[in-house]
Image (cartoon, rainbow, N blue to C red):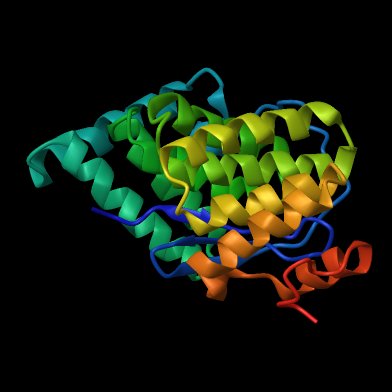
Amino acid sequence: MKESVVIWLALLIPVLSFAQNTHLASAGPSTDTNVAPKKSLDLKERRVTPLFGEVSKTSEQIDEEIKFLSECDKSFSSRTEASSFFATRAWEYLQEGSLDTACYRFNLAHLLNDKNVEAYWGLGVVSYQRESWVDAKRMLSKGVSLQGDNVPLLVDLSTVELKLFAITSRKEELDEAAELLKHAVSIDSTYALGQYNLALLHYNLNELDKSWDHLHKGRTLDFSQLNLDFVELLKAKMPDPQGFFK
């Protein structure tokens, strides 16, 4: 089984990484959370827009999809298998930084199987890398609706909520992140990134004791995921109660 996407974001500094297996990409923060109004897209633009832009299909697009599905039916034992194949290729393109190609492959994976969580997950990552924060939330939320107990996916969506809070300061983003993390930790408290995101959540709530507590839980689980810049921010507000970080 393919490993999940994992992300750890120190939202008060420009550091973000999504990883699928060893597939990494990075992006910095932006201050624009507006969703651009939908416009008429030609077929080339639709291919590299999440879920083909979610607009009515043209006859040209329908013809292309029929041909594609027919070819896949000849080459794979099932469309589910074909969908997994294209999702795997998409993660590879994402690792290389080829966002448009990755997006198109994830779209094809979704076309073949609209229950493939990897497709929504990947499109969420692509959207984040494009600094389309709201689209990232929407795509990851679609994945969570299919796999509501997928801990890494829940934590990834919480990261996007925390990102949106860092940009907008809307309390509802923190509340949603808190609910996601509460559920994730109830399933698996040993998932390090869940603990790190809880540290960040409590930092934003100015609950510094709790922030330190979750940060230490995270570091004992996986020190390699620790963001030392965030540690410095936390230390500036409150010294480490355990004295581990001087």
